[in-house]
Image (cartoon, rainbow, N blue to C red; front, side, top):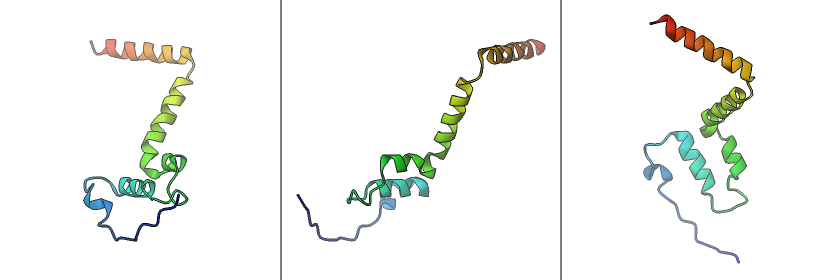
Length: 87
């Protein structure tokens, strides 16, 4: 099925979401493109700069999960000793 809607100039998404960052507006605009051939894919959206901090936090969590348990227990002992030294 093919639709041929007439072209109509919009007011822009910025008027609807004025309090978001430019990166947020950009990613929303690209995900709302009607033509699927031109629309941003989910994979592309996840690589967008808007999600950079989230990707970095995810990498940090993955790194922390890979630390050996002996290293973590050593860190906990240091933290505990540090707390005792202030008593």
